[in-house]
Image 1 (cartoon, rainbow, N blue to C red):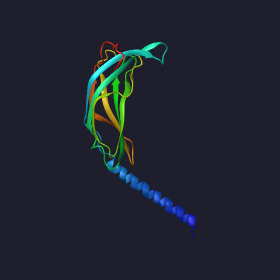
Image 2: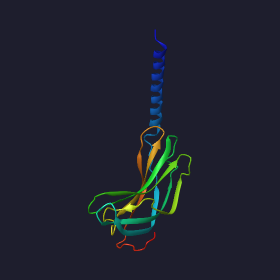
Image 3: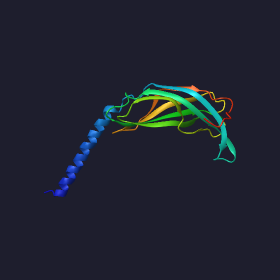
Image 4: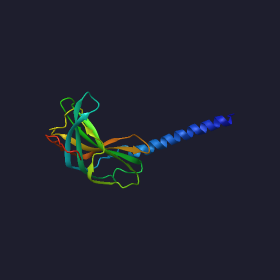
Length: 180
């Protein structure tokens, strides 16, 4: 005859197995959903400065400043299995020293139940746009892309890129003004 502890252990193990099967079933209902949406990005102002780089021995590095407009309707991404979105705007470009440079300029967390229409106007970059040298000056192909991580209730964390990006050139000369 089984003891009370043995019966409780069997009941607990069976309950965990059922919960795991239900969680997997919930995950599989949204696992193959396309979470890409159109994104509209416009840059209204680009400024470039050459500043002291305090990480190296008396070197100067490029520091870029961007003012951008961003609009997207995030409503199609949200379903019952999405807890939140982590949005981020990144810049990708190539230099002589590095074939691929990626810099995050802005980010935002959108929780379920919040406003899902993203409509930003004249927004400045949230983080510094530093290059480890002088790779921003006269760079003609800096691409801005909005991407997001979907944080689900159950399942994997997909990384999705929006279906809209913009490529822009940086100026040939440095700004000498002190304000942005």
